[in-house]
Image 1 (cartoon, rainbow, N blue to C red):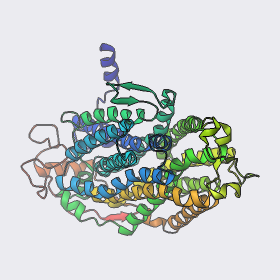
Image 2: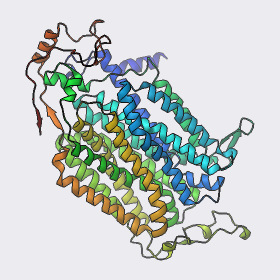
Image 3: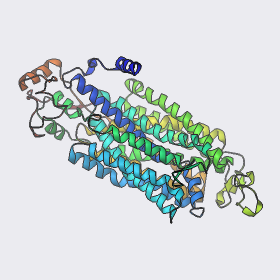
Image 4: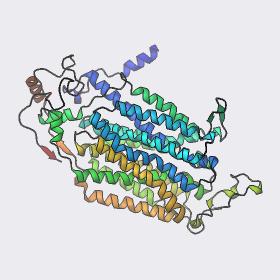
Length: 545
């Protein structure tokens, strides 16, 4: 304990960084604000993990519980999660704006997440209509993960303009790591086998399929505790920072006076949809694609995809660290277009197969042959997919290179879209707007599995990756042609002298004394419209870079 205390003390923030030591917050408020931001990071990681951890195992799990369900029903189960999230994201965003706080919605959503994850892992009990129980559990997990809109909105409100790119990069890293580590965890529990362990008098099954749900249960309980009073304290500073920059008198009047570009906002929402659609399509299709193209068994696909996802997580981590330095050299919008979208486009083009021969065909399983389902004769591209005998196979080299481009391009794209989006909207409450942004990403995750069932299964790889390559190319072209829409408004920063004048005019300094401490928002005895700082005189104008 003493060692842990010393380590903690060594890394504890002793003073405010020079670039934020401007009187807007005390050292204690600064530390509480960043603790709350880091809790948001973990929440975003968990919500992404809740979606991805079952992706590589859902087909063999469903096939075990109900062999007659089929791949198209599997697509519906995968789509149920983002469908629930898409419907409820704007609602959660509106709720957060209405309350002015995010603690209650997040506690309720995490409770629902825990319950739904437990239901998913209890399906081994074989209730009637088990496939519909699986569908319902994934839908409820989607509803609970609609809290992502609140997390994004809070992150925009709780960070300064100078901190925004770094904070969004880190929260995007947390989310992408959740998407990538999910299949890695699934691969890690594969040695448990499909029988695993049975506990609690046969009521709790812990095997390679149910372990993912139980992991979600444990982590969500821990996340719930992080949002309890005394641990998570809300500190919003964005509107206050802009108010002081403009010499305003009220945070609400300040953000109401700044009109965002709605065309810019909707351009970024559509771009976010296209980007996430292409990433989720690969993650959804990855396991079945490798089984079809390379004749891998269920266990081999889970294992090899887990290894690739782990390597991708490392590549993504390095990419996220490099985003902020890159944006200091090159404008964010150009890094987005030529670093994010161009690499994603190349990744899709590389998935168009150029192998010399069609993939190995799998014979339909016949139990009377006394062979296991993993026998090589039953592995490969199923004859029920008519294109398997006509189109060339995807090579392993293509798959690895395309996967690598995606692992670099997606982190860049998803980070900078969210960063620019939050800056374009300005300091206003962003709950509903972040709900629309989250909803667009959810729509892509709804359509991705449906796309697999309707296009890949029926028409094959040429159509699948040809259409997605065209989507990326058109989006990239539009962003380049309208790149000036991606320039966020800028504000003149008040000098220390101006800040002192503001504080002096208000009658007191912004220190940590009991009568002046208000955690970055108006004191409880003031309404949101009442001024909390004296007006400095003329307003600074908003200019575009």
